[in-house]
Image (tube, rainbow, N blue to C red; front, side):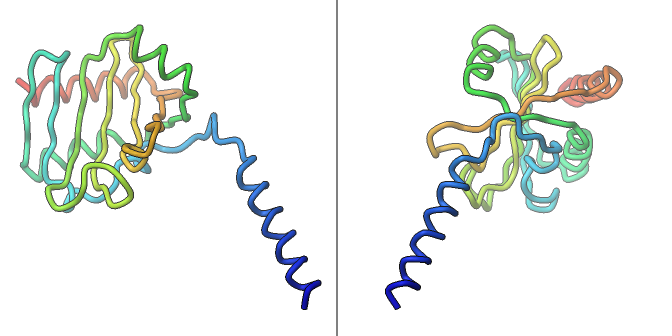
Length: 161
């Protein structure tokens, strides 16, 4: 019996150390993994332009189009220093916030997402499920072609007018 407990104890330690040593920096995901919920669950979108103006939408069609436009963008996890430099040195042009009135705006039960567009072309997706738990993990676009970026920006300009 003592031997079994000892073996279980050793195996538990191995699992804990293996899990804690996994490298998470540089992790890649697709953007749709960071917009939580469907267009039926997300019922409000706010678009902020250069901290000058803001517009909200609750039209299901517009919400579906915005979610669709934000899909299929390859992202990689930002390192802490990289994130700090990006947010301190570059200008944010658009911030798109998707929320659900029925769910929390951050944490494990959150529905929605946030997308930040920088004037230099970077697109950043903060992970809303990590907000409020210390550091918010953010992901940056890796290889979005210019046509896709321009299509998204043109769409945002058109609906904000």
